[in-house]
Structures are given as structure tokens and as C-alpha cells.
Length: 143
Image: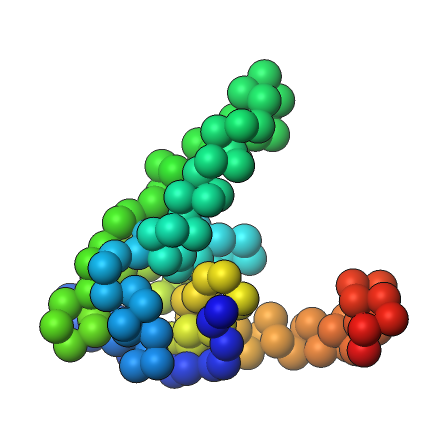
């Protein structure tokens, strides 16, 4: 499970340090792809495989499945962190997420998300009230 908020910076070569607490889990490899709201999703290989299987079993006759799968897999990049725990974020994915230097990496349960710092701040501010309002709807009887 991935938790927390981390604030790494991209270097001039487009590399990003993974949060230290997740380096062992991701040391064997990971997949970066486009996420919703212009962030990037970072999946451990086993989680990416689980999603791949779910999409494989979805009906290819459904246009939404085809559309989602095309974007999801076409933008995916498999990476292996270097000895310092850095990954290279491909230029196309950096452009999609608006990543230039200051980033935020958040834990999002089964994945990490990489955000441009300013975009994350705007998103978080916009979602604060919705987060408070939806707790009962999303987790009925739990909180």
C-alpha cells in the first residue's frame, strides 16, 4: 500500500527520486502511464499486470474499453530504478502532466501518482470540500 506525500524534483535529465520507503518494493521495475486529472500513475509490475488482466477480460466491442486501453497502454513506459532510486520520466509523460521541476508524489493505495506541484496544490484545494462532503457516500458507516 502506498501512502503519504513526497516532494521530489526532476533533474535536468527528467529523472525523479522515488520516495525512499518504496524503493525496495519498486526496485524490480514499475510502469508509468497517464493518469486522470493530468497526473501520472506509477504501478508496481504486479499491480500493472492485474490491471492488464482486467482490461484483457473486458469486452473489446465496448468503445470505452478500447479508448481507455489505447491511451493507457500507448502511454505506458516500463522503468527500472537506478541504484540511487531514480526513474526517468519519459518526455511525453512529463509534457502530459506538466512536469518541469517541482513535483509531488502521492501514495494512492495500489499506485503512486506524480503531479506537478502547482497542479497538485490546485487539485487538493478544489477537492477539500468534496472530500469532507463525500466521506459518508464513499465509505458508508466506516467513518
